[in-house]
Length: 522
Image (cartoon, rainbow, N blue to C red):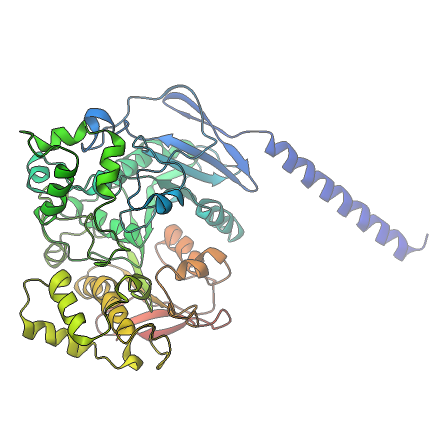
């Protein structure tokens, strides 16, 4: 055998042994279930590729029976052995049975969370922690997703390992019941309080998984991003040391008013469930059978109904958890002073504008705004809004698409208004008020602009993010969670902080091959 042949054979032998050993190691790891000790309890998770998953861990007492519509209560210390190999049920969802059927099985006993770690992690590793809050209009959603695997795996590829946590929280009327009765009882914004209790759980237990409780970044999309912002505003900006950074995708503190503004929806639920004659309607609602309550909630408006983003069930100022109107809290500086990133997609309003397709004239749009968005506005003030959003389709959303995407004569106009009102304007307000006061970055995603009718639709930045390629939003998130700065050896572009003077923002290109650029947010 000549030297070349000998070298080739040796290389083949080494490669074969290496592949065999790696395969055998993976097979062994797959049979070694990860275990973590919490208090006197043992939780056994599962391994999946390069991640360890601990699923369905309860973090609060079940909010059922007398604890329905109550502030979440912590659990006593864990004891015994617990399988942590399956997600817990989602919290009850609002909407039709078909819509609810799109979500995994639901139950009022739903307050569980999930922890994803690198496959080999030890207590004391002190890894940064990313806590994800899902979106869904505060009506639907679940902590169950592939984001945990994708995020941890990508962080390992980047040699910047992180731990990922996701939690369930109560939704719709179960989590955001709103009325004078609720305000007096001090039980407003229960969904946000569920999130808060989960963050306290992270502080107490994440060290056992190898995480650092001092390096927590909260991250959310849509209603999850709004939740992140409101966690920053909770208790007048006292974040209680629960997180050191925030990452918000398509969600900012939106003007939602006082909790008493939900009175008509509360009264409807009380009437529908037979509690109207009760001396204590809130206590009566706690005893209503689950199916009866579900049927009543399903009759209330949702984000897919005609009034669209004028949500029935949403966070509101309750005087306790959120002491005042969200914009006033920001103006007063009552916000957690932590670095944050906030961004939007270019065409946020398109997906929410199909339910208003029967609006085809300017007069009908005027009436719609007056009825649902600004009932206290004068006709002249409504006309001022219409002037800013003209009927010219070339100015509407999807932006930059000329006369294309006209589902109806008013569709692009309504989409532009909704996208600005709920997403772009609140983001810009937050950035403007906090410029120079804390480290902030912002971005705009124009990816998937060619999608008919939708353009760069709400949530489309997640497609870029979850692909996890070099320079993706996910890479920036991981860098941010690790270093409190989204920059690094990523895409060859420096992402400057936002200031009122520069208005610098990262723009994700319209096509997959388009490199990100820095533009001005004007």
